[in-house]
Amino acid sequence: MTNSKTKILIVNPSGSLGGGNTVSNNLAIGLDKNIFEVFTFFPEKSSAISTLKETREINILIPPKSNLYSILFFLYSFLKENKIDIVHAQGTRAAFWTRLALIFLKRKPKVIYTLHGFHIIRRKFFLKWLLIFLERFLNLYTNILVCVSEGDKKLVLKYRTIPKNRIVLIKNGIDVEKFQVESELIETTKKELELENNFILTTIGRLHPPKDFPTILRALKLIIPQMQNVRLLIVGNGPLREVLEKETQDLSLNEYVKFLGWREDVPSLINLSDIIILSTRWEGLPLAPLEAGASKKPIIASDVEGVREAVIDGKTGYLFSPGSEKDLAEKILELTKSKELRERMGENGLEFVSKNFSKERMIKEYQKLYQLIL
Image (cartoon, rainbow, N blue to C red; front, side, top):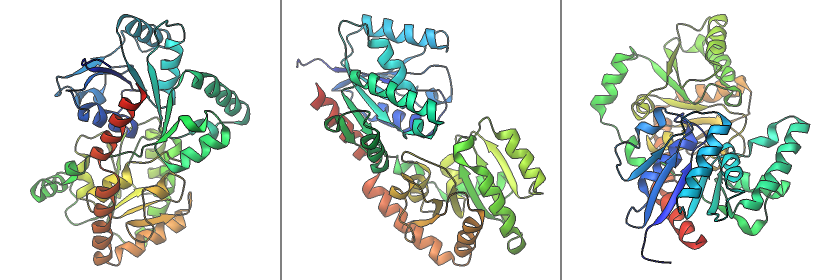
């Protein structure tokens, strides 16, 4: 290797500021710019780009159009014209584009593919196996597959999409300091949302089927007879917003639920909450439990792979049976009884997240991987 900087291209699957893009942006910002020249690709202009614009050392790439042909041609042309050392694809969709774009390149960069959840195995039988065989083929052009959880690593080994010696485990990390919010700001946000005298439940995520928001709504319906002052904040946008708003109305919950859409003040929203809830059918390694811990808030989350690695049941929060509104409601009511228990779980959560899921630890592990692969 020469003394010149290592050129890294990070390919993102979308422009939405979800968990995968949050991890990707933290990585792009945190990489040592004395060692790495960083390029980030987004298929469209969006909110996810705004967090990078303050860092002038990051080169942001956006194709003229967001269709498949435009994306592939843009990536192929950029890789052909620039001597990129490593392409780092974030998620299955980004990895699909990346590896197709470089198949016909004479000079191929090293390819790292971070799997943010092995979601293709949730598809129907025929499509599932078609995608698995496609993964096996495209992984011929993958140097390292990064799994963000032990659960995903076990699934990758089970379905044999890539040899074991090319799998690395690097768990997601978050900016813990970002969630240390001043009390004045918390109270101001609470007042703006007219929540001063309420017990607040908050759930954050893209409004699409895997996140299973209906279970939270049904659980809320069960606890209201015992908690008239409870309020649920649903933070995020997605294709199911209208469906969920209708279900809220059908369950006579309009008074108790606020749909906030996409927000930039998520740390404040978590800090003003009493309990954070994650109802999900499957995950890679979710950020919601980590963000709850960083904010010293207890989490109640689905007992599924990935989530189990981010929640210590009974210590940083509770795990509940996926899809069971009764179990979720019971866990919520258990936590409402004791402020001391909620505070103890919050303190445990901060210690757990700071020790195991800091962005600094994650960035350090990726930088080490980048240097080892060349």
